[in-house]
Image (cartoon, rainbow over the protein chains, first blue to last red):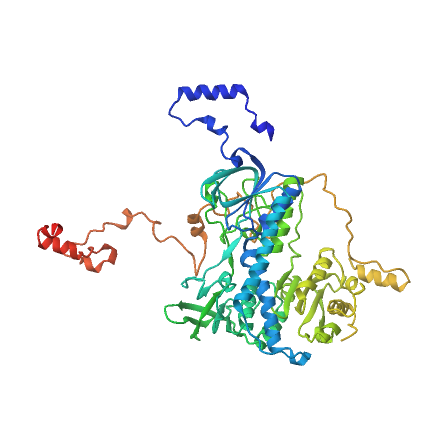
Length: 507
Length: 125
């Protein structure tokens, strides 16, 4: 670092000479002049984006002793996940579930409640308290680990310099030996239906509606659509989910589990129109009208709702990043092209998270953040893309890891299945929450776990055990021979493992 | 392979069962690491950065992308000269009002009409 700041006197003299002979040229000495503090200060790592990928990388880099700066334009750290994604949605999902349970599921538990009222403003405030607490927590971790937090919009000025338009006005620039792109993703808009975040909304708008809509249409039956659809359905909206494919849940969800999830959500009052495409939308009237048709055509229909949630997926966000200034490539879906060590065409510029390959999941981004910093610091990192769990936080929750039955069939990989229903699990029975099952898929010869799919209470927590087993190459017998506490929901997991090579005891 | 079967056989003979799970132990960084660029494991095409399979600009992306069929360039793909003259054939006249709105005459404002009618005096009234 110090060496880079020392300028040989001869170099200064020669620069001065050249300056005097060319008075019209902007002083080359300005390169050496001290400007903004961050400008003169070359960082070991400059991170563009303070979302899950960016902030985790920043903290890890700080822990590894790197001089690191993190640029974030939102004004708060944590990106989509903490501000307008995973975290606020979990707050609403949890509290709306409590409300729904108090309304519909107390009498048979021996609890009599009086007048139950929804205070949506207070529910939103509880959500904001969770979000603020967590985002401020990251700011604290930045300070603790010596990360410089720059509030502004970063764009590439050159391969080593990032120009930042500061949120408070003005401009600065940061020079980095290494640069990490972690700019995340944004909701994909629906062509012909302008998002106003009031009546035609994305997941961001769905987290802060000021009243419960009477009717809501969700375009897209993936995880985001079903979670937000669940929230507003529980709070009293009549929700219809329109999905182009014949299955809900999005890519990766096992067909058997998806079918059961649909059945259970339908029981809760959500309507589904699968194999249906939205042709056009019109929001000029009092309600938003959607012309829909069967995916194959021939069954046109008009739907209307007070609010339409567009949840057809997310796309990488690179707007204003200036990738073109340094010739970095994006693929046909807008993802930054990288190699296995997260390097772009310029090997000191790496890219992680939603803006590049792989599933758009916060925990995948976190793993990549740690690995990318380890590649920079130690030359070696590790992420197992075959073992990334997915969770849908509806009620019951759906979670899975590894391969599903359809993928194995398609790849002609032999497998055997063990299942165990929560209706046969003691803890689920005492909780009066018995819907769902654990489905374990194993290699028929070795019993090695190939995939695990859970729908049921606490599925999102339970999947951690399957993920650990899969990461370390455990067999279902290894799982089944491991003692699980009684009475717990996790016993269902153990018994499903047992069912792959023998018989479950309680079913 | 067949670890469980082997283990079951071993268990049948009274030996203790060994799990299939691999205990890796404390991690060490390999002394020799090959940093040659390899495709990212989650890359759908296996393309490497800088090999020209991807796009540097939106225009080059448009050239190859498919959206309800190929998004080929229809404008600018052939030179204007090759399309011939835009002059109307002899005896054929175009009405300006048949053209798209942006090519039509801008409507006069009331102030302009008055200015014309009064010979400009209205401007000073």
